[in-house]
Length: 447
Image 1: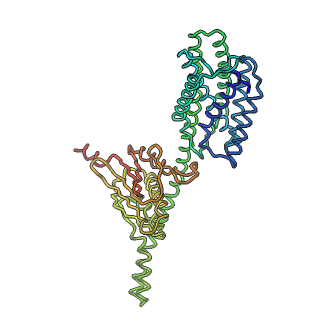
Image 2 (image 1 turned 90 degrees about the vertical axis):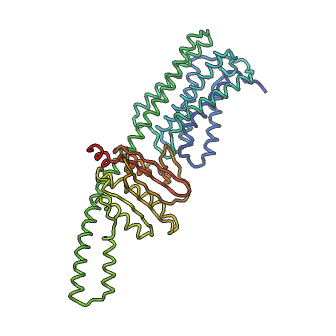
Image 3 (image 1 turned 90 degrees about the horizontal axis):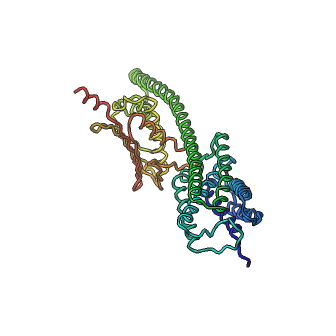
């Protein structure tokens, strides 16, 4: 069996390293049907593509063309295997190439400064004689760099998210920078092996390293910014909807209270003037009392949201236990109160409605404790609640639509200088919100 040249070996190693680096950013995304078959065919295509490049002596131009083709193939492979658009494929390919390039630079720096023989290289067509020690260095450096890049950048990508950068101009700029980096790096390495000057080598390598890191920072900085802007837009849309819903619910509850009050007077008048069936009258009064028995908290907005949720809970055998001093919430905007407690109760109801009737219990308390106002809720749950950055992840598979209720509550808590925390253990989910107690602060200031 003929031995491989350094150049031939380097081509296969570079393609493999590039595909692995791309997978750091792709593996959490939605896969297409028959993913294993698609992946196998793409791996075969990568082997054929690498084999098409003849093992000519290294030049900056030929290697630039080779790496450009490898990059384009990685974009196509992402499109074939994953259910994402072309902009997302391009973003992952740019990030993947930058990651592979960073690892390559670190390996080159370590082997050159350490005085090791660079066995995996592309500067000649001589037969490759692999040194085990150098191969181990290669594997360790690439593994450590890939792990670090995954922790810092790729881990931020979650399945189901839109990871494409909206601006084609910015994504095109990143791709152009990458193309320039491919060409310039090829010339840098060419001169490195032609006549190695340590100062030149260090300056050129560090410049390339900085360029690759900046590409990753730029891509993921823009990605995180656009993600936050999308989430903020959705939350603001939810607040606008909740504002309209609040005023509709307020008018409805007010109308119901007026009608129920009038009907009670009419029933009393009927009881005195006629001789109706007493049992029938009691049934009518009982039906009306469902509205008048709603918890009066001292905050009209909170009364509305509790009335609205109580009707649903009564129909579904859900018990809400409340200990609430609603006057403590008067420092908050009515729409914020409606949004905060509406999302809180909706999440609790969605959790307990799946349980047996005796565990369909929600506890809610709002009370002052010293200089703090404490909002606390408990409810049972089954299954597992996964946390990320201290916030529970939605159990709904569509993260783009659901999960904004928790973020909305977090924003409201921060708006009033408060904090929010979640805990899930022993099948009990607990939510705690702490606000500075405005009344206590005012009393201390007056004294």
